[in-house]
Image (cartoon, rainbow over all chains, first blue to last red; front, side, top):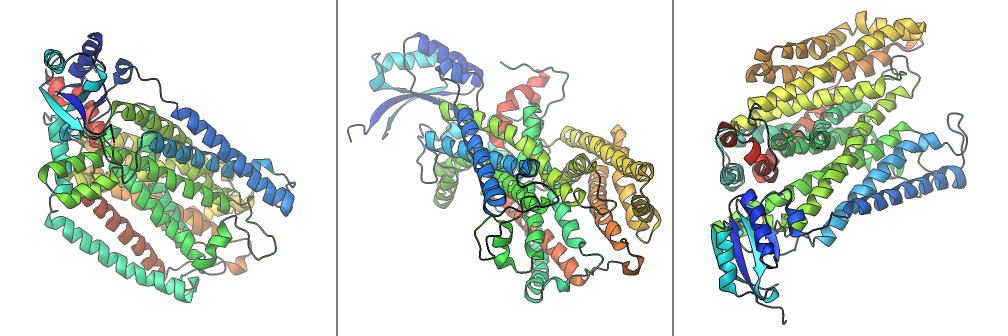
Length: 177
Length: 459
């Protein structure tokens, strides 16, 4: 467990616009930000932190396509191949009749597949342990966490920089990550 | 940064700060509820227990306990089913379609509207499940499972089977959408419980919050998930009542066999769903003192949706009458003549008054911004929408092609009891939700506070 007990400097911000400017100025000074925690989604933060657009929509499409294929395979397998029957004078492959169930299965697998992927990649699970740098970060404060081991600048200087960017508090924190 | 015109009225009044939002909403979960909550819960539970007896008799003695006869073989069961499913349309409409249209006013109301949706769909599902009589073999009847009836599969050409797929998909996707929105708010409650030293709450809400910590990367993914789910749920919500309407429209019964049904049913569903949301929210905002979050402006905007959908429903009623006459088909003509002037005229005219005339009162600003008037009209609309389904179903069936088999429908106490059961279930579930879950989406409200809160607007 050599990762145990990493040292962090935690800047607390009150306002999302101050936070956004702070991220830019902290990054300009060459400091690596570990992560920013907010009580609500802050728009534009992903660009500032250099995060790419999430690819979850691609996952949604793939799962949706899987649902479409499964639905058609199931219905054609049952109604056309295994036990063909004439219902309402339609032929053995009544494609228009298959549209509603195909649509529903596409949506069902797409939604569940995407949300499942989201849970897996974001490590969200009922027994998951949150990385809480400050308990107020789910209430009304934005928290910027900077890992000391990840930066060459010493902690005093980082603290001064955070204070000048408008942090209302700057704290030390040791986390078992 | 997002800038909003100061001419627009604030969506959150009372000069709230971000901290106030957490305090105002979490306090309902953290503190004991008022005596009013207990009274409401007891009434709901009594209703549920009385109704459960009707369910028990239905399962034990069969659906012969209901007032159905050979001619009217569908009545209250499917009326109630369609009514509840219709109500279940508002929640996902508010959270999905209004999200795509970037309507920020949805944020204060989407949580409770989605909860309402989920409970309403559960109530709706009770009727098709119980009408099978033998619930335990129902699974084989409706699901495409291998069985011992030869290799006979379920019939994918039947709209009733489409309904099974549509309703289960709608229910499960709505549930997921709702839960995804709840996760950050559960995390807020969890962390507040940790600060206050409430250990049991911290553990329970900790498990419910899935270890959410509000990291920027997770929020970014969360926003993508919400947007894609909204995109998926939008056609889904429209498909559900479309498919429900096909239960009728694909048959050859005069009065049912019309192509106008899908849009007409969808508009009616949104209409009744918004009415039920209004009924519930007007009580919730009062009891929980949420007037600063669910403002008169929110109620007014919902009333405008009611005028629009109510008018669409009104036009659909008139179109049905016109098409019956214009088609020249005498059975179709008689079905509508009988609806308007036959033995069920009172049901038809109740429907017309409640659904077409009453919502038109919302054209007056004084009425649509008046809480008492909104509350009364929302209940009138709910009654009207029940009558709409009753009229469509019973008046089309009770005088069929052979006058010798004409009959009337009289509900038994078990029909009434089943309906009561779903009311008990719905309100018990909604009250439990309002006690243990945050009734307003805190994270979303906080995200708009800076731009649409009263403080910014006054500056």
